[in-house]
Each structure stands twice: as C-alpha cells, then as structure tokens.
Image (cartoon, rainbow, N blue to C red):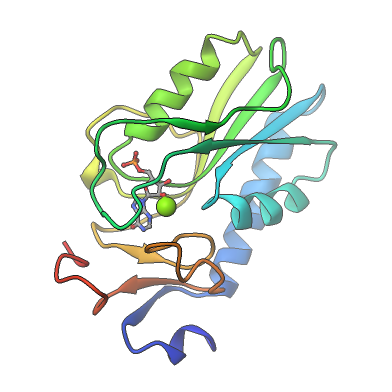
Length: 186
Ligand code: IMP
Ligand code: MG
C-alpha cells in the first residue's frame, strides 16, 4: 500500500498481499490442471509482465515463456475495436498446451482476437488466464479459464496496468479516481 498512498488520484482496490495470495492459488490450480507435457505461457505486452513473472514462479512445474505485443489504448480508455499485433511470438505453438496470460479482460476484443489468431496455429490446447475481469464491459465473448479477481467497471492501474504508460510499477491495484481526464472513472 505504501506506493499507492503517495498518489492522491489513486484509491486502493486490491492490495499487494491479496494479489500475491491469489496468484499463488492460480499457480497451484494451473500446475494441477497441467500435470505433464510442455506448457507455454504467452504474456501480452506490456501489462501482463508483472502477472506473468509472479504466476510463472507460482506454477511448480516446467514452463516456457513467450511474448506477444498488441497495440494498446494509449491515452484512450475505450477500445478502438481494432487489434494490431506489434510483436509476434518467437516460437511456434503447434501441438503445445498454451496458456495466454493477460492483465485484464475488459471489452474482450483483444483476447477474442488473440484467441482466434493463436487457435489457427494448432496448439494442443489453448486457454486464458486473466488477472482481472470486468464482465460488465464485455462486447466480445472470451472464455477465461483462470480469473484472479472480478472487478466493477472502474479504470484501474498498478501491477502492470497503466494509464498512458504510467503506474505500472505500483505493487497494489488501484482505481484512478482523479486522473488527467474527467472520463477516467466511467
Ligand atoms: P479489451 O480488448 O477491451 O478487453 O482490453 C484489454 C486491454 O485494455 C488490456 O490489456 C489493458 O491494456 C487495457 N485495459 C482495459 N481496462 C483497463 C483498465 O481498467 N486499466 C488499464 N488498462 C485497461
Ligand atoms: Mg494497457
């Protein structure tokens, strides 16, 4: 909570200790669900990096990592509806158990697109782990196999999540209540 209390525009939503406990729990579930065979974790840059690094260490089995870059909202808080791949995977995923690791499922547009894209590459299985889920915002269906926390329709930052590339390195997840634009809290 220390860092977030330095920012007047932030309201604590999920403290770091709660994130740590939940990520550890998700790691145990994932290890149990994939008892053997290679498991490839694919993180969506940049927001999912913090979640990935903690989750990967909480999964007590061999995993391999890859990264995919997707065009972000930038300064806007609503999706343009267009998804653009800015960095593709380094390695093929055909025949592998693949878990997409994402920071948040909001409209679902990004994950819906990515799921279809990766499915075409013939992984053995393809699932999604999202740290946060804002179900009330969904426009496109996404099947989330693992969810950290369901949250209300508020714009959050911290633990990888940004506003205009700020706040990613906060340890807590906070609601941006008095940020640069009046539309910050929908
Ligand atoms: P979607 O395509 O609308 O589901 O958007 C997913 C992406 O939007 C996430 O990967 C985030 O980068 C961004 N996003 C959505 N909601 C938030 C939020 O509350 N805070 C920060 N980023 C968000
Ligand atoms: Mg973002």
